[in-house]
Length: 161
Image (cartoon, rainbow, N blue to C red; front, side, top):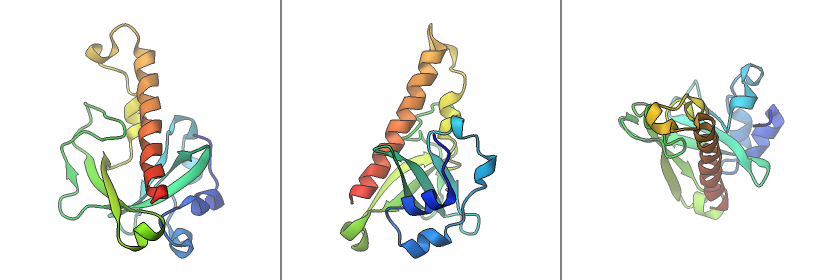
């Protein structure tokens, strides 16, 4: 993922007001290894049920605000973005308000995502012998492409409203 600036991130949010985007608590962008990220995802340190994701949709940074589901937010499941079969114990149901009139009417969409937004790391982990077969690099490349596609598809669905 190409490194993003604070103004780019704040301008990318499609499902919140400009005021909410301006008040979003951003991660330390200088400490991120952008070359190893397929999307930027983080949890608000002041409100752990609020999270943010920014990815590229149609070659533009597009972001959204997410809310962790009520109740027990972490469960044993497979993340729909990285589909990692090894790290299945830290997955949460995140819900995003749709952009535009649908979102203003309260319409939402949800999905199971790694609670710590570690999909990029999970996609790049060394494949198990069963997964790798003959070409471990191809497995990792397929995983990375899948994370990019799945995250962009979800964000695009939110943006379309």
